[in-house]
Length: 183
Image 1 (tube, rainbow, N blue to C red):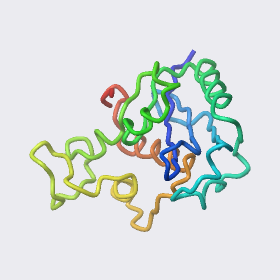
Image 2 (cartoon, helix red, strand yellow; image 1 turned 90 degrees about the vertical axis):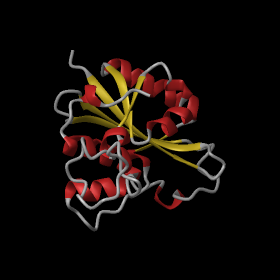
Image 3 (cartoon, one colour; image 1 turned 180 degrees about the horizontal axis):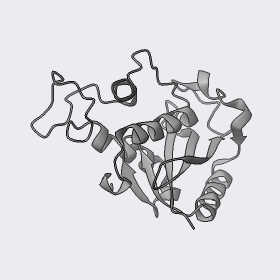
């Protein structure tokens, strides 16, 4: 069976509770998306949140489930699809909010995308530390603009759209998944 990876993004409320999770499952060799999942947690989504206006942006793909049930389903999908590694942009944030998935290997996309030696699209005049990491401007939106050349790109801040964009960053970086650091 082919090895697959999951790219995950979460959106949280002002109370730091996860209200939605977007997941793209992709082939580990060519990063082709095989499946996407988008869960909204009804017990959390009524709480005030910065991006609640785009919570149902993907309404046709939205699965409304209570968190415990959703996380069990996600783990079942991961087992069925042979997912062993989870990737996220600023993975420490998402991993910290999803303790149910702590047994998986987590890898951080940002740890490569923000470095000149891994991201050839970082402009020569961009301020970087001696390590090669950008001093600022290394969020998903800035990195996606650099890599894609789409200067008008705006991050949606819907967990599924953002997970799809994070996979796109990996595709554009063209790095082997083993290069991404585990957190």
